Image 1 (cartoon, rainbow, N blue to C red):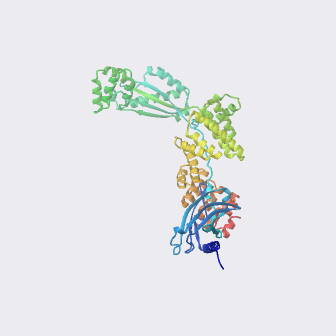
Image 2: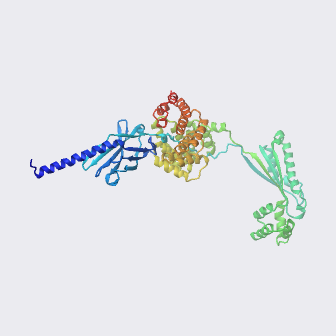
Image 3: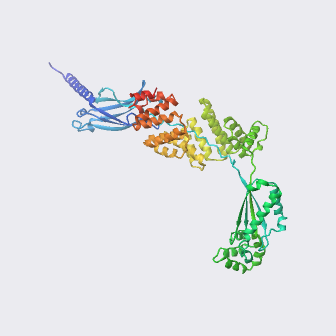
Length: 595
């Protein structure tokens, strides 16, 4: 048979194609020996991403000259599929493929969605040469997805401003001073009849609730005063004697026994002289400096007094300063009168109802009255009055805080969003009056409720940069710790949440952070603390079961799962297909725990 050039070319192409097809068939057949290792397996979600490493190993002699082999990786869940990426082997890159297995490792990730929880990672190879290709059978290479990191719970801490009111007993000081003649401790009639004496007499007559009467007796530095070392003590005793006499006159009876008298005689102490010199107008600054130089200088008491007597202005010092040192200063601590909590609650109620003026309570008392009711609607009404009356940042912040507390309890998403929006409005108003850590912490909670992660992060960062009390610091750390868990910063989150207090949600999140950071024993210890605070918290026991599953403590897995489901039935369905329990799901103990 004669062949022309065209026929010969066609035969040659067909021969090449037949050879290529044979080569690809061989590669696909050989691909049954390929190995694909995925780490971690099962897959895990962290920071809304599923990240893993895939290492593919081809068998020796599989990769032929001028060929490529591409492993396409996909995640299949339900009736859906997400293409993840591919690993490609080019024969030119593996010249020793006839003797050594080609190996290639690559990092992959894909965004997590809630319906991806159960599925599998697949690997499908495509052998190609030129324009021709052949696909190998699909290979399941990993299960997915462990979602333990998503067990984090929003703390949503709410911070109220400090009321500025002190509910504890408070005492106010009253001061009275009596003066004595040089070298004497007798209380003069002129002193008793002076304005100071009459004031003390009237004060004692009022029968103020008194805690202590502290009398400090002093003397002037010159010899006639100093040589009698009992003079200061005697002067203090004279005031105590006078005070007790007056209490008897005004029929204090048993009340007198509850008053503590504290006598403080001062002997050879320059402090009183220095204080008096500093405040007197009888000496100019130069003269005051000369006195201070002597008193603060070296030498014994007599030496310093001798130097003072040699000063050019000694007579002025002796006549106008020294007499003020021969006294007994009396400090009387009396109980500050306050409204009772019941009275403040009643007044606040009348104010809200319009039956009394807002000024019937101070701003601090009004704020305190709001803390006395557990009913959020009543709190809100009181803070509304405070906003209208005082228009302070505290009132706007506390009104917003109440709305956030309401939002935390709201079951209707629309109502929750509306309350969060209104809270943001008032927090912005508060911020315009004064920027505080309390306001920004509450803004972080409001934005978290709204699902605005960036604004929540910005607000908590701003709050953390400001000074706040212990309550504010704990709230900031509670929110920040949650954000760190969601960013897969687990060690950092564990440290942050250790400074966020011992609220049940805080302890749950702290344990989760410790677990995800590989601190398994620490996580179990924290969960034990959480269970001690709230023995009915199913989420705590579920996380305890996960921690024990990772520690391979089978009995503890089952006992904690049982407690979790007893307290929160919805956890049964979650446990059934949770890959944390994959190695236990066929055991009788696991099945019994789910019943």
